[in-house]
Length: 256
Length: 256
DNA sequence: GATTTCCATTCGGTAATCACGAATATTGGA
DNA sequence: TCCAATATTCGTGATTACCGAATGGAAATC
Image (cartoon, rainbow over all chains, first blue to last red; front, side, top):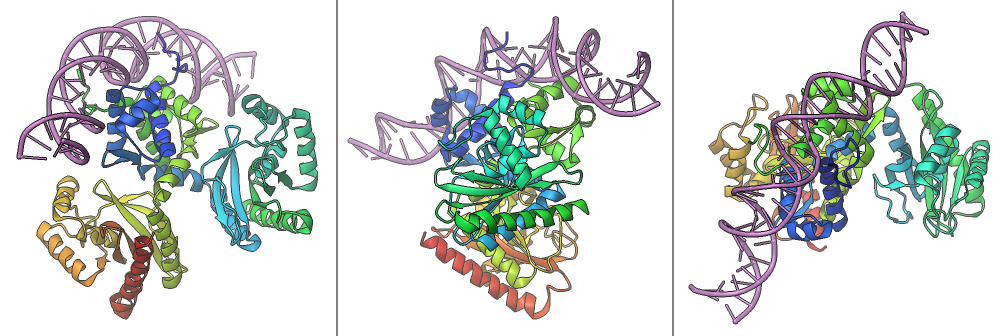
C-alpha cells in the first residue's frame, strides 16, 4: 500500500533526505534529537539519513550538531555556470551594481518560479532576504514580470494555474487579466516596474534578456528603497541603463 | 540480507540520489536511457529518482535531457556563507587576486580533504580545473599543507590513514615523515609552498587563517605558473603579502 | 570522583516501498 | 501515416527503511 505522503512514482526517502538538508539550513544547525522532534521522525530513522549525508559530505557534524556541508557547492555552482549566457550575465550584474550603487540581480525562470542566480551590491544597496538560489513569484517582481512578458501566453497561463497569483504584498497584482494587460505594456516599453509588489518599501526595474533564438533566458533587475527609486532616475535613467546593459549582453550572447 | 554496496546504517536510495545528481553534472546533462546505461540501473528505477529530484527542483528536464537544477544553489551558498569568518575571507580573496594578478583562493578542511570555498582571478590568472566546491588532497597543496601544519598531530595522522598520501604529481610528498618535517618548517616560517605537487607547472603559496581560539579555520593561497612564481616574488613578496593579509583577516575575526 | 542525565548510536523484527522487467504512451523523424 | 526511439507507468517479489527499545558515551551535577 502507498503511504499518504508518497507521491506517485517518486521515492519517499529521497524526498525526505533533501527536506532534512533544507530544514537544517533553516534551523542553522541542529542535533539529531531536536531535528527528530521538529520533523516528527524517529531518532533512529533520522540517524540513518544523517549518517548517509554526513558520509557523503552533504552534511557535516560539528559536535552534536549537524550542519549543511560544502558538498552542495559543486552542484550549485555548476547549475549557475553551466551556460555561457549565465556567466556573461554575472558580469553585467556587477557592472549594474557599481553604476547604480543599488542592488542588482540576474534571475531565471525554473518550474514557474524565479530564481536568483547572481546578485551584487552597490555602495548604498539595501539588504533584503534575497539569497542566491532563493525562489520568488514571477508576478510580483520586476525581473519576473519581464520574463513572463516574453513567454508564450499558454505557458504564462500554465504558471498562473500552478503557482497562483498570491498577494505577496498589498500592491501585488492578483488579477489575471490585469497581469496580462501589464505584460502587454511591458512588451511595449521594454522594461518592467515593481512598486512594492514583492517587498514593502522596495521598488525595482527589470529587463528581459533574450538568447540566440530570441527566447527569454532570464532578466536583469535593479532594486532600491522607494525613496531613492523615484523621479527621473526611476522613469528614465535606470530604464535606459538597464535596456542598454541588456542590449550589450544580448549582442554578446548572439555572437557566442 | 544486506546488499553489498549498502553501508551499515545508511540509506542506499539517498546515496544513489546524490550519485545521480553528481553523475549528471559530470556528463553535463543526459537522457534517462543514457544514464540508465551509464549507471547500470533499470530505466524504470532511474525514472523514479529523476521524477523525484525534478519535482523538487534539484534536477530539471530540458527536452529529453536532465540537467542539474538551481535548487542546489541555496544550500551551497548557505554552506559557504554561514560563518562570518568565511564571508570575510571572501573579500580577502578578491583583494589578493587583484594585487597579485594571479589566482587566489580560500580553502577549508572538511572530512580530511580541502574544499575551495572562494576563488578569484587576477588579470593574468591561469585557468585550472579548480571549481568552487571541488575537493583536493591536503598534502599536495599549499593551502592544504598550511592547514595540516596547524592541526593536532593526531588528527593529521588520522587524515593520512584515511586519505593516504598519493602522488598527485611526481613532486607530491608521499612519505609520512617527510611530510611531518615539512609541516614543522611551515609552522616556523608561517607559510607553505606548493611546487608543482598538485598540478604540473603550477606553484602556489599558502597561509593558515586562525579563528578566535587560534584554531585553523582555513587557508588563503595564491597560485600561478612556474615561470612567474619564482625569484624574489616567490621568496619574499608573495609570502609577505599573504602573511599580511591573513593577519588582517585574523584580527577582524578576533574582534567579531 | 561518583552519579545522573542527556545525548547519539546500534539492534532486530516487520511492514512498507523500492527495484525490476514488461507493457504502454509519447515524441520526432522518415 | 507509420516507424523507431524514447519516456513513462504498472504489477509483483525481495529488500530495506522504519520504529521502539536497548546500549553506549560524554558532559554536567552533586
